[in-house]
Image (cartoon, rainbow, N blue to C red; front, side, top):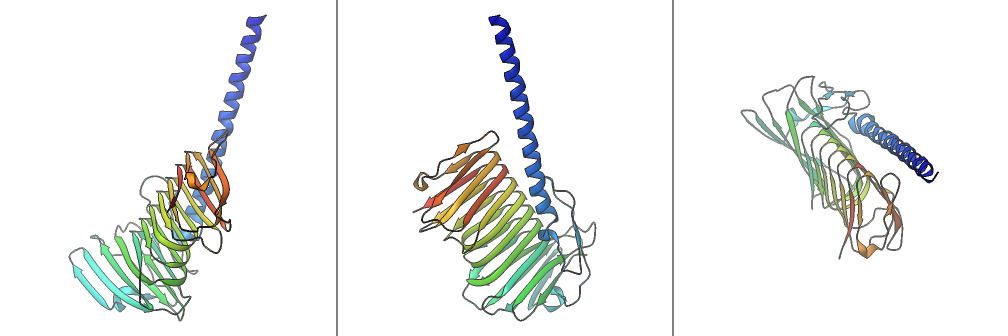
Length: 309
């Protein structure tokens, strides 16, 4: 009898373990699918204005081959024909243009293949340097410059393989900033505003930035150093990669960190415990005096939150 009972309990334990494993797999697939759909199909990859469109292949760890409308839309101007400075040498083209900005101006870049790098300076204008590399010459850069907004996008016909890199200088204080790239990294440093940053295949690096609203990537890591908390919710999401956030000084927020496949490491100074759950890990708690939400979510990757003295 004792042997039969032991065998019965063993079978039940095995069945329960299998059920929990299946539930965990289902949760992982569901969360990953939701994240990738949001990255792949939301406005981040509507690479043209309202009248244009972009087609993006399903997100994977390999390089994506999207297409963006190569034709100028209503109100758009060609960067190539209006640049303040331009240099062409073989398969290398460099163009620079300045845009006057008023307080609270909006700024956006939507790129297909290539990195976006933004830093601050003490000028009331934006300086945008576009660097094109590649033997294919079908890609173009278009912009719209209104009284309080600058919008820049890359346009390339199908099967055109051209790397377009942006090097941007913005005033230290600005309004809403949107930076989107399908294949390429995004770097932002020393700027205060309201930021929405998204990439499909590429890492995101933020340094001494104030005003983060939403940062997400499908395949890539997120490294961020935040000078202080934003006025509203802050969200960092990656499907395949790690999240490493460092906060400075008197940072006040409500933390909500979670992973599916990966660990969570919270600085001991913050005194927030990490809970190991059936699937993944979770950490919730008050940072400083509390305040806006700080949400860190990784599907396949770790989350680390550090406090800098």
